[in-house]
Length: 118
Image (cartoon, rainbow, N blue to C red; front, side, top):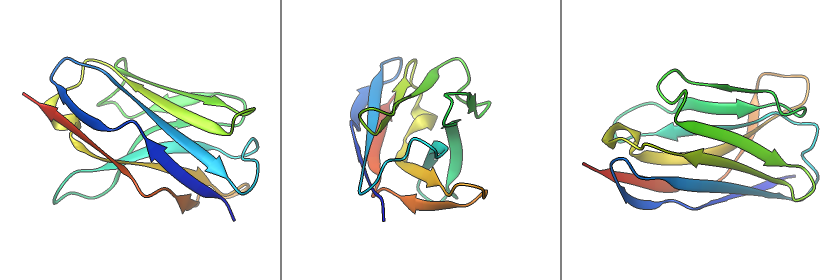
């Protein structure tokens, strides 16, 4: 069983930057697609960015050009660099691990709060 722990959230002014990290433990995750999701109050959890085992990445339209996802398989970490933050980026950000051979994200972290003040 893999455990995911997010860190790096906080309060930032609009236009600022934050870098989120997700550390995986329990087993290696180098074969898994990883992704970041977020959930704002009163809204459903939504996809933000994903990265495959070979480091191919894709993004939600709302963050394209502002956020960058990366991974370091040697350290079992995945990161999300968030630039030009907007108030609408305020949410709890979750790291998810997709089960190999499926489209199911079967493991999640506890989330980290990102608050962007306007």
